[in-house]
Image (cartoon, rainbow, N blue to C red; front, side, top):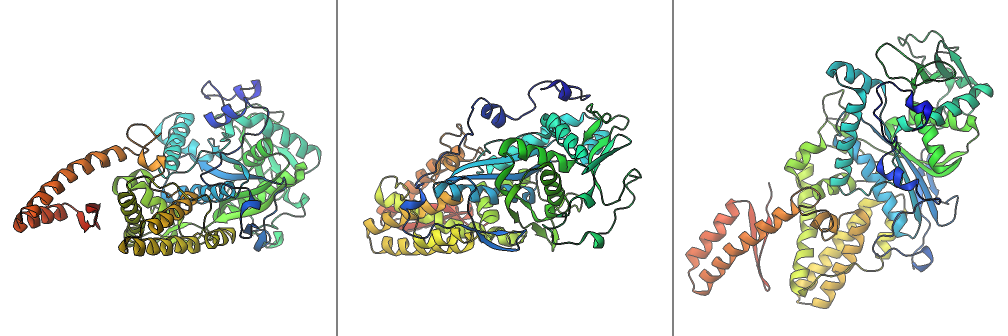
Length: 520
């Protein structure tokens, strides 16, 4: 940590960046995302390779052209760690995880930055209420967010910077903006002069004269009440850093502008976040960065919300469902299917019924995978290429619902091959299905979901348990098979009924009986 960063009161000692960033700083060049299974450079694909994305600023779908050929740079507004994550928070990370995976599959090198806002009004307020250090609350919830991302199969970002580790960069940005007349100091605060930036509100398509002036904030030192705080003067009991304009702490908007500049430079490809961030957060980021001299983001991509009873899921509204609670009742891979398969720009209305539907739909895919493996007698590797129709759907503004329809069609074709005892066709369909599922992070045979490489208990502690249960159930099924062999139908039916009462579904097939979890 630099000397100026160490002046914060109450900041724990140690590096200001998370592990991903500390590792990245050891390399002189930008680290690259690993290639996924079947990843090929664009020229190897028989289908068209132009990826198209909806750009919020342009208000239309645009062809994606990277600033650096073969490379994609993405900045995603990450967590404000004042509380543990609900599924609405995680949806954004999951949507951009799928986007990142698709770029990687298409042969691009992806640099993916997802920040952590670990100093904020809400964190400080919670610190006062709980009588706990602000940094302890932030660290605890940062770990909860990372656990939530991990349990749902999101790849770790290339860089994951914390705001508190980048105060020197923020001070430098403010210095330049003040010199250029875009910002001004007032009573220890630093404000951005929105009238000095003619492009202000272009992203959200608003007119500054129609913008309602904020009230009740007590910021009387502003030239215009629509000016926003880049730096907030210290208040009693709050953490602070020293600056040329007095002690204080950064504003939320300044944090992201400074971190995006540090890790992606003056221009990068995609800036992402939830729809609620378009204004004021992303508008204010743009104003600061462009007034500083950056070109900033070329494309603005925003995901829709998770809603409950038509309202955005939010802690403040009391309608949030924590990820940590959800995984107690639903398999994480089912949650990923539920949150990741609707189009990223479509709202998801939370309901138990929709979760059951997702569970059943994924169960059909998973059942097909298991049946082919049993028929083949060995693992079937993913195909080198996804079907062209799947690629077309994903290229068209990340059309996951259309891509998912291709997966289900392929599963039905595979089931027909199984019914016809056509092993070669069934194996070929499974290879295609695995390639497509891998792009969506939903391959049930991937190491993340089977537990291989994720520790003895797998990512959520359930996979090794599944193996134990499978062994026990198969012992019971062997007893049922013995009863059937001696034509003791009553005993065989009793065993089947008892297993079904336990929530298991038994299917008899040419390869013998198999079990799956039934509907809840």
